[in-house]
Image (cartoon, rainbow, N blue to C red; front, side, top):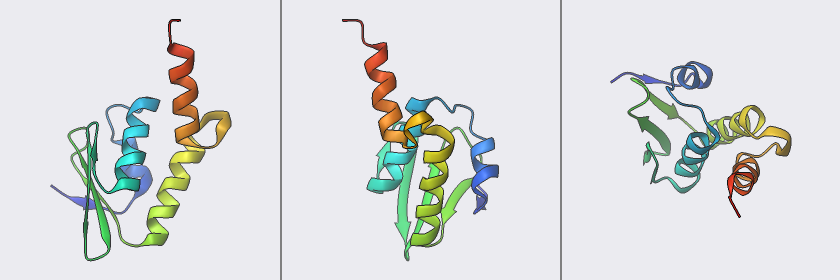
Length: 98
């Protein structure tokens, strides 16, 4: 499996970019854990994100890279909230069938 540091290329190759999937990606990075279809691990200060949806592993080589990637997710998938978590909660609330 190839490793890349290109955020956009990696995101473009995801099979699914629903807010639920992006939220799982975001939270797996924040918690350095597995969430949904994403798995994040740390080695020598670098984060590695893997998913079955992409043939490449995304490497975030520094804290600056992690922040830049999370900021990118917030700006591209955060809706009017500008934050993935806020938009995810909004969508979930709107989907509830009270």
